[in-house]
Length: 147
Image 1 (cartoon, one colour):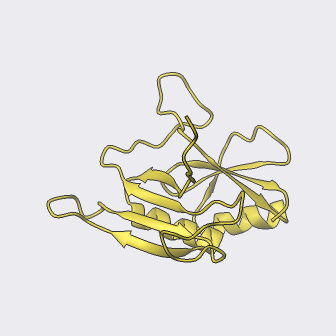
Image 2 (cartoon, rainbow, N blue to C red):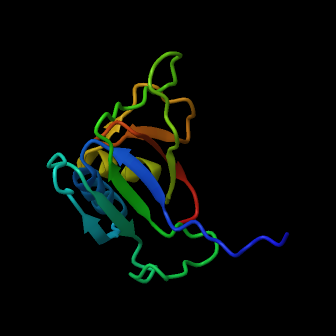
């Protein structure tokens, strides 16, 4: 059977308040909100879904990113969200994914991330990588690389 055409449209991140978490990543990455929904009738005020995309991706669902480019990040409400524990600990909530973000200047990017609401993790496993936590507690990594 031939593989049908497909593409990853976004990575979806669970959050107790998707609009607040999307606003953090909007500031951090300088991406734009291209869709925002919620709350649904009868659901919590924090309920909803938000999509961010980089400026270089057109703002339509049919936009095709360049090869290797992440098309977008989406944030969805999870009513029973528990932040993952970093570093991983048996019996505690585990991280399902994390973002690796390439930066030109690790020190400057770390300071900027902290200024927009990130927290530096107590556990730093590599010298040239900074593990930070977003406002919902998801770990993400900054590392020197091509931007």
